[in-house]
Each structure stands twice: as structure tokens, then as C-alpha cells.
Image (cartoon, rainbow, N blue to C red):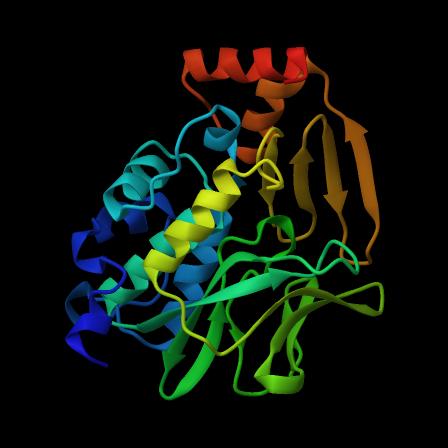
Length: 286
């Protein structure tokens, strides 16, 4: 790996200690307390990140730009304890892993979780190589994503993560597909090619996702959390609970219960001004 690749994700600029404190990291460390770029550390960091940083698009809903500069992401997700969507989440994870010493590259994925429609490439994922083996890492697919890395070098190998099972299958032209097993049925989540993506590519994808009227993140609330037993998704005024057997329970969220729900279920507390604006948006239906 070249020096340029080592600094691609701006890991040298990240306050790694603050990040590890934010995610409550309790994984393995080497002599002198240094983290090692091995598989156990990768799994522990990935798992801790997923457990601690929720998926959310509230800045988009509030009409604010989503800044992918690593210090801006650090300020928002680490110091202000907010969440973010895939470009923010995986850029932060990539910077941390790069800082620890891992080989990290990006990929652009095509969402397949919304039925048969062919969607554009709008999802950012990571490939991390450990001892010559590639692993899919993704802290930014919301309530449906994996809790830990999934091996890419063994297509079809099933990986059980608590109550959830994932596998990567290979299709024609080297296309890899992440799938989840629910109720005995394999469901495609997203597909991606071997082509490498770089942070500058995510800047363009982020512009579409945060501003285009056809983006699924523009004009509606999206807050999600992939819990160990039940996964949660707040979309607009409906809270959904996804169970490992595929059952989905839905309940309406009244405007006067929104802020309490964000705090109780997702651990999100907004500044007073932002909270008031969010409630106003919900009440107005804008």
C-alpha cells in the first residue's frame, strides 16, 4: 500500500482517541495500548461503531449541507454525538481504520432493498483487507446493514451475527451482492462492482443524496438503528420494528412524541432550536 493510499481517508487528521471514546471501544489492544490492524480489532471497531452511532439524515431535512471533510464529520458524529448517513458514517469509519493501519478502499453500491426497480449507485461501502483477505465493512446502511464485517473472498459463505445472517453472493461480471436471511428467505440488500471509489466520488454522490428532489433523503425524516435483536426505522411519521424472522411491526409517531422517541429509541438529542424546527417541519408536512 502506498503512502497516498494510507492517507486517502484523512486518518491522520482524525482524533482517534475521541472517536474510540465516542463508540465505547472495548476491543483488543497490543503492547503499549496500541490498536493492531488485525481481524479481531476490525470486528470490534465495526461492532462498536454500529452500536453507538445511529443512521440519520436530519441535517438534510433541516436544509443544511452535508460536509464530508473529516474534521466536519468528526465534529458532528463524535463531538456533538449526532448520527449521519452512509457517506458520513463510512468516511469516519474509514479514517479510523486507516489511522489504525488497515488497508481501506471504497466501493459504490446499488440499493436492491426496495424491490425490482433499477436504482442508481448512491450507497458508499468499504472494503478492508486483512492478511490478504478482503472484508466488506459498512456502518452506513441503516437498520438492514451488517453488524460486523462480512468476508468477500468466500462468496456464498453464511455469516451469522447474533440473530441475523448475511452472505455475499457473486453474479456475472464480478458483481457482488450483500444478502440477508429473513424468515428463511434470502433478500438482496445491495450490489457493487470491484471498481474502487475514492472520497472525491462520494462528494458527488453526497450532493445528489442531500439535494436532488428524487433522493430518498430529501423532504422526509429518516432515522434508523440496527439493533441486536430488533431493528428500528423511523421514516416520516412511522416507526418500524424489523425482527429476524422478517416480521415488521409499524406504529404511527405523533408530532408531540417525536423528540421523545428520538431520545428514547435512538439516543438523539438535538439543540433546542433544531428540535423546534424539526417539530415544525413535521407539523406542517413540508
